Length: 473
Ligand SMILES: Cc1cc2nc3c(=O)[nH]c(=O)nc-3n(C[C@H](O)[C@H](O)[C@H](O)COP(=O)(O)OP(=O)(O)OC[C@H]3O[C@@H](n4cnc5c(N)ncnc54)[C@H](O)[C@@H]3O)c2cc1C
Image 1 (cartoon, rainbow, N blue to C red):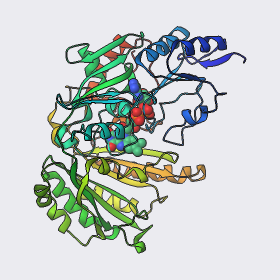
Image 2 (cartoon, rainbow, N blue to C red):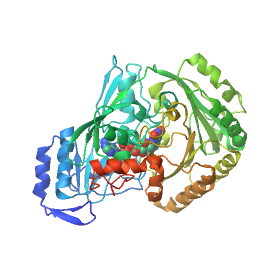
Image 3 (cartoon, helix red, strand yellow):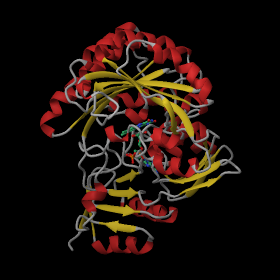
Image 4 (cartoon, rainbow, N blue to C red):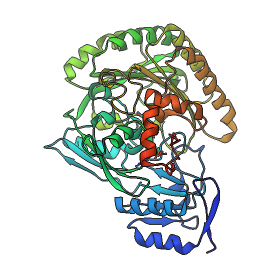
C-alpha cells in the first residue's frame, strides 16, 4: 500500500507511511479501517445522505484507552479529527474528508444501577439502547424522540424529548462524564471534578473532547405513558392550532404536546382515502398517572373533528420509537430551526400556508413543546443557553434523490424566512445545518464567551473542530 494522505487540522495535507496506521491498529482493541476495508463505505455513512465524506482512516474504538490512543495519534500527526456518536447530526460533522474518524459505534453498553437510579452509558449508545436498559427497571432519562439518535451528540447539545418538561433536559440529568481531552488525558467531568469542563459539555457540543461514557440520574417513570396522535385535516389546522396554543401554554409539566404538518403516511390507523393528503398530527405524551392524564388531555381530544385519535396507554419504549419509521436513515435532509415564546396567529398562518405546498411527501414541519422543568434552570447554569424558549420548530426538509435538492432546500429556506419574525432569534445547536456558520454564536448565546475561555483551556489548538465550533481565539 502506498502512503496514506491525510488532511491536517490546519487545512494542509500530510502523507504518512501505512505502517503508522498498522501501529495504531496494534495499540487499540478496536479496528482500523481504510478505504480498502470492505465495510469502509458502510461505516462512513451517516444518517443524512446529503453528507458523503471519505476519511483517510476510521478508528472503530472499543474502549476509552482506544480513544486516548487515537487522540494522541491525531495530535502527534496534526490530523483533522471527526468524532461520531450515533451519526445523526444533520450538519454531518460526525465524518470528515481526509481525516481520522473516531467512531464510537461499537461502544454501546448501558449499565443500570436500579437501587441508585443511575445509568452509565457508553459514548456510542443510541437512545433505544438507553431506553431498553433503563425501562427494564421502570426507569428513564429524558432524551429525544427518535430511538436511533446517538446519546452523545444529543446530550452534548442539550437533549429534549417527551418527558423533558417534567424531568428537564438530558444534560439536567447528567451526573458525570468521562472525557478524553485534546491532550489525550482521560478526565472525569462532574460538579466536583473539572467543573468548568462539566459546565461546558452540557450544551457546548463536541468542542471539548471525546466523551466515552455518561452517568445519568434516572427517574421512576414506570413503563407506560398516555400517548398518541390526534390527526386533523390541514383544512382545520388553523383553528386546531389556535386551540393548541392556549392548551399547550397552560399544560402541566407532565404533558408535552408537539405537532407535525405533513402529508399523511400510509399508517394503518388512518383511512386509506387520507393517505398522501396534507394533515396536522398532534402528538401528545402524558408522563404520570394515566387517569389524570385522560382528564388533562380530554379538551384537546374533544376539539374539532379529528380523522383519527390513537391516544392510549403505550409502553414508554414503544412510544419512544413511534416516529422511527418516518425518520429512517439514507434520505437527503436539509433542516432549519427557530425557537419561539408563543404560537402567534401569524406564525400559524405561515405554517399552514407552507404545509399546503410541501415539496415532497417526506418533508414536514415538526413543532416541539419545551418549557416546564427545562425553563426553570438558569441560562448560565449549563452551556445550554436558551431555556426561555417555549417551543421550537424544526423544518424537516427530507426527500429522495439529488434532483429534488433545490426544490426542497428552497422551500425550507423560504419557510424559515417567513417564520423568522415570530422567533426569538435563537436556535438549538443540535438542529443547525452545515451552512449556518453565522448562527453558531447565537446558538451558544450569552454563554459563548465563557465557552471560548474553557475551549482555550482544554483544546487550545482546536483539534475538535468538526462540530458547531467554538474557536479558542
Ligand atoms: C431524526 C432525528 C431526530 C432528532 N430528534 C431529536 C430530539 O428529539 N431531541 C433532541 O434534543 N435532538 C434531536 N435530534 C438532534 C440530535 O440531538 C443531534 O443530531 C445530535 O447531534 C445527534 O447525536 P449523534 O451522536 O447521533 O450525532 P453524531 O452525528 O454522531 O454527532 C454529532 C456531533 O456531536 C459530537 N459528538 C458525537 N459523539 C461524541 C462523543 N462521544 N464525544 C464528543 N463529541 C461527540 C461531534 O461533534 C459530532 O459531530 C434529532 C436528530 C435527528 C436526525
